[in-house]
Length: 127
Image (cartoon, rainbow, N blue to C red; front, side):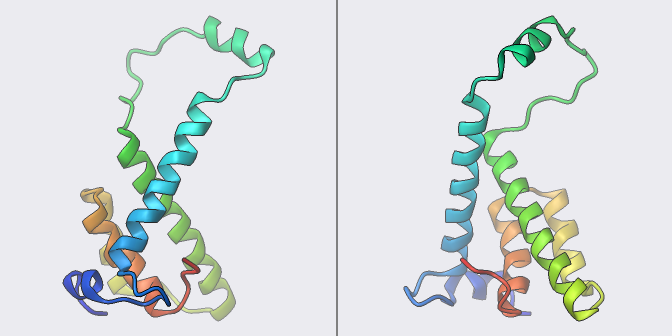
């Protein structure tokens, strides 16, 4: 697998867009979808239950919209790879495992690109 810098410069799709641009677009779409979901109204029964629920002081703090979107794309990439592994019987690559661990430690666009790059090299990305 090539390094992250090569992924930023390399273009794989017919429009000549770099992988980092494609990942950024995917994260932006995920962020928009999450915002729509966050602003959707709850059915009446759930609204009443949500108002009555006590606030848990030990609850995890809310993640930023950007981090939530990055995690959403990461989970989607995981689904794609698991599907591929089911079809092929291939084990998880150490390269992909290391890229995933790096993303989990530092949830940024830059750390997500190597995960996407690995899947793109296998021609698994449809975007």
